[in-house]
Picture 1 (cartoon, rainbow, N blue to C red):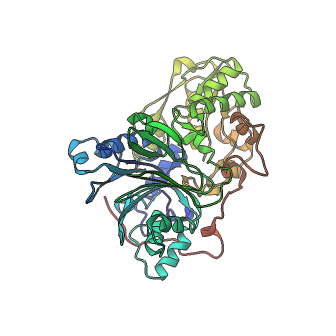
Picture 2: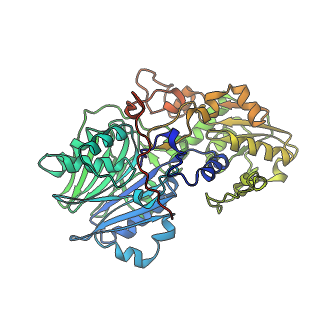
Length: 504
């Protein structure tokens, strides 16, 4: 789910009560963050319980909030909570309150100022035709423009999410039936989206014309399922049917499944970071195993940037598959020289600088006996600000590593994302502001190398990047955005959309 705050407005003095903490979190985590995962199921007596399980499988896509809306034939029921799915949706009383045989759910990661209850999805509205609930993975690049136009015509907005814009567009449409109204709304928005919604008769899914964000269709007996990733189908025992196509609206009703194409069919351009980082390793996307692709990226990296070392060490967890591929291709031993603690929460930040400097050790600890006296190559999937890389290199040296080399299984990130990935401003991206040698010096590594842009495509099974018709959305590496960034064009607009601050 996108946000309507522009990236350079994260530190608003009006609503941003936790800016210092958030900046520290970025320094400690130094990771890209996906914004959402979506799930929906139609025609199953345990719809809410299965939705909760599906959201568990999608938890990696968002950890700040979760919500489920169900429909029992007469009433919609909603439970929306801050925190993890397991914190709220594992109790029988909660599931029992979510009555009905159809449900949609959402997990969310947000930026500062947005982590409040009014933005937790799915969002719900009453329309003339009945109730409508919607959740969203992605980011609309003209949502601010549309929102300002809607407000100028009398619309009342209750959240600061771009998802609400769709609700208003649907409500204001004069088309005859709901599907036509929904399609008319889609034709007015730009950017990246995978929508899952529900009326009192339909489960609805939609994917943007480029297919930037993923959405899959599954079946469980007589029930239809929509989800961000195939791993959410696996957890409930559903059969994978197919990917929802780019530019397609898919609808499940008692009469069966309908498909509507709202734009001419063009080649899809999935965000390549789904393969590099965001999707769960056991997911299948476009027929490709995410785990196998990440290993192939590691093998390609070993071909492009070999290292004269004694062992390959992954930076867990995301660097593990690529490190396996690197080790296999190079013939080097693979060792867990770093152990990750999976039980540290995201918000464990102490105010004292001396304690903060130990933050990386809360999540990563050196396996000292494995690395002492060894020349090692560290494998990671990406570098954002570089602060985590710096600390891990330092940690390896303190553990006695003789040499520490860095290899990254994605190209340098030089441009921010506006399609649902939470990236810093360009001036905070290490690769956008330093040469390769300057980055190496910053990290303190003996050598540093990234896979090439063509190399990432070769790992995906192509000869290289097709510069005339790129196979994926790869703007973070190339600066080539597949859609207009309308909200960032023209004169500066009002960027602080709400003076209402929520606590708790």
